[in-house]
Length: 195
Image (cartoon, rainbow, N blue to C red):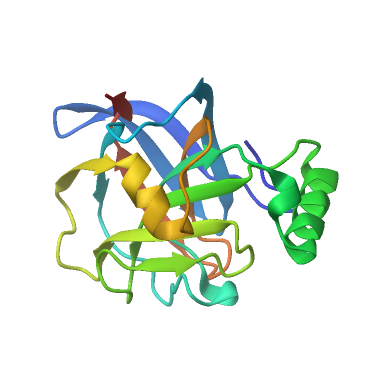
């Protein structure tokens, strides 16, 4: 899924270190590989996924709009009652719909790798308050190896947004370097929902 005014990150299916994976290559680009879904999220719903990152992005910082890039993001988009949002949030979502031709989600929870933020911290989207980044890796400690995760999607959403999640509408992968003007290469394992 291209993003307005952005070069596209290239996503291809290939094997990496013996695992089937999605390869992402970003060169001053940002786009999303997305799969639409429609499923309820319960207290027992877990998301399982993995990623492999070769290097962090120089100068990236998810808390600053001009540097808000990440080598890996696994995103979950949720439906909800748009009338509950602030006027500012509603206007932002209307603008996004005008630019992309489709209504954005009510809320997006992204699992990310950041250069600075503490692991397990929640970083609000630098440009959109309806995006929350939950940091799973920080800095250079776990580079060049597969990292596997099993996350309780219900509880993570509640921690990030302070409410229970609505219906899950999409799952996406995103590697982006458009803000820093850098490059990034990463691999993603398949994403599975359990429970």
